[in-house]
Image: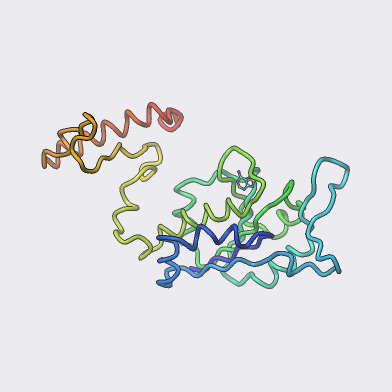
Amino acid sequence: MRIDILTLFPEVALAPLDESIMKRARDAGVVEVEAHQLRDWATDKHRKTDDYLCGGGQGMLLKPEPIFAAVKDLRGPETRVLLTTPQGRPFRQATARRLAGEAHLLVICGHYEGVDHRVVEELVDEEISIGDYVLTNGALAAAVLCDAIIRLLPGALGDERSSQDESFTDPRLLEAPAYTKPAEFQGLEVPPVLLSGHHGEIEKWKREKALERTRQNRPDLLDS
Ligand code: ADE
């Protein structure tokens, strides 16, 4: 898979992808990621990428011309063009799974108050929001998308099973709580069943606790 990110802040998008599992996946050739400076496609002498809103309103908007020019250069026959925006469809584990099956993603990062809507109408296949809050910098959202997608690619995680049995594997269920050694710490004990070696009992405990945790932290999932 290849991912191109178009942003005013390439370093912000790439920094989290230069560490740990993401770095190893990139080094191993599981994915090729490149972040591009949107300003490189601005043609005026100030390399301007934003402007005031038509009809008035607070803030600035990304202009269409540099984005149209960049997408023309970066898009290929198999490209899916995404835009990070709080007005997008919610990004979920199922979205990550679907996008992990694409050959090429081009992620346009919104900034300021967003992008000129002609970009959305003409260029974007999918508008994506990473949550119901507003960031100043869409490159952060792009990094989140990339991490969630790349870890699902074959060869990205050391143990393939680690992405097969986790929160949202069943979209309505969070993962059960987990413990490591020591078995007792400051009087706090690891639940004995986890040390029992009884596989069936452990699975039963995990199912119960997963449900309990979901009920506690995300009752909305169970209602859906
Ligand atoms: N840009 C600003 N806020 C965002 C959000 N919640 N999701 C995606 N992109 C964004």
